[in-house]
Image (cartoon, rainbow, N blue to C red; front, side, top):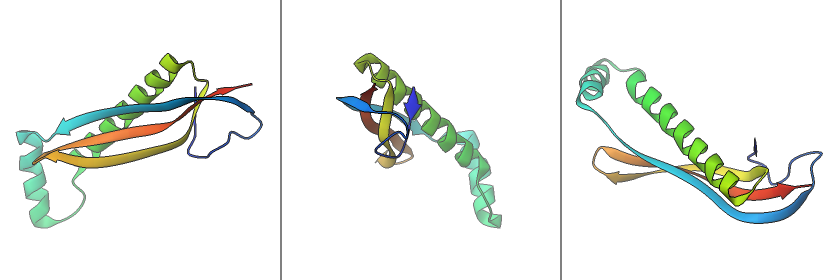
Length: 104
């Protein structure tokens, strides 16, 4: 599966647009991470626990988007975007979406 943020795949011809492929995950903080984050907030610097959580969330959303594209019969997903939103206090959604296409 080819995943691209561009609207074309160089050297490939798009023969059909199959629809929107999407994948999301909602993650909440946990008490262990919050303790370390609170300490880091006092002294400053990167909060590595949250960086790792966000990276894992992005990967899971991308994998779910890829699985959705496969269900549509796609060879590639173009114009891929990632967005995040707060669902409730302490929980956020990561959404990956793009256009599922069939290549020649």
